[in-house]
Length: 108
Length: 118
Image (cartoon, rainbow over all chains, first blue to last red; front, side):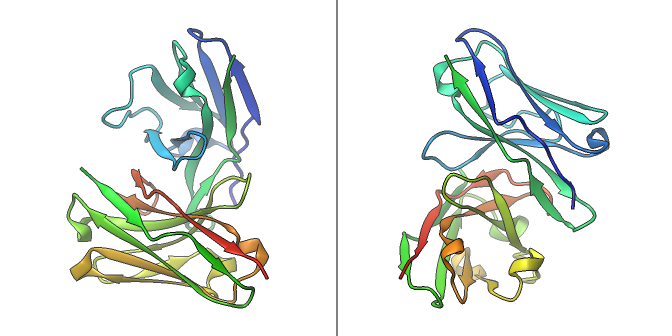
């Protein structure tokens, strides 16, 4: 099955930029979706199809995808951005969605 | 506004079955798939299965397909997940999520905690 690799944790000071990566074999040829899960809450979709922001998601959230790495970038980080972030793609070898292990974003 | 409202927490003994419901509102029920995803305590997200509300077709994670069944009631805009022969490892929060396609989720339910303990 398709493996997605994320760093366990990322720390950033308020107002700075956070970068969360998602590694996978030729992931640039896949559509990557990002889900945010705040503590004790259900996930919400923050980026779909590599770069699209759903309605209601701040412009501070952006995504990119090329080669073997997809990236979620959060600009001007706020305390409320502290959460776990999961990348997700379609695994064509098993015909089902798969998630990365998740990255805990800590706002210092 | 899209809402997926799930049934309440459950405590079950090993070997028992559990049913979790997911009631959709705010959109045309038959226009979107419903996925189920679970999250064990302190762990990540695991996709479990999908149901197509148009026709009721289903697909499951291979390791769960003999213990999980998804059904639906179109008149109630609801999807139901049954997990049989529960084990302690099935202790998790179970989420339903709306899928515009088979590969994506755009809205999530609030989650249902299922605890399996003797």
